[in-house]
Amino acid sequence: MIGVESLRYIIKQKIFALADSFSIKDANGNDIFIVKSQLLSFGKKLRIYDLAGNELCYIEQMLFRLMPEYNIYIAGQHVANIKKKFKLFKNDFVITSPYSQYDVKGDIFAHEFEIYKDGKVVARISKRFFSFTDTYGVDIDDGEDQITLLALAIVIDMVCHDSNR
Image (cartoon, rainbow, N blue to C red; front, side):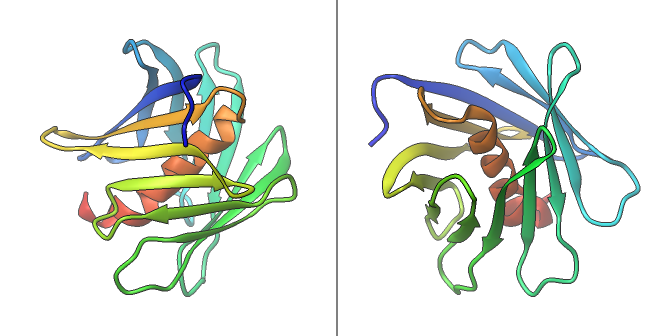
């Protein structure tokens, strides 16, 4: 279970946009990261930047796959591969990482997710309603890799909700 020492992030994505560009905010509503997609590319490619413009993470969609699949890179190093499992009434994912064993479980409506690391819940993703943007609350344990878990939350949103935009 997420402990008292967790960090809350707010991810807001515009529903109607030519290219994804959005901010990640802290619990107080302050921008802390910027996410930008690469326009005119084969497959989705996103980058997470700090406010000084330094690239922190690169997310790349793998093409020609039966189920959606993405790779996540930090500082040029491959840190995770995330694939949607083929299930009719569930939104579960398989995450392969050389650093930890991750697992993601979600509800049937793809609005609530839990990310497990080595069998322990380390993050919760919750979609909020009644907004002109896709808004997510992401609670991450304080001692965990914040950027990797935020990248996983972004990929989960792209897989589950991009066709709704």
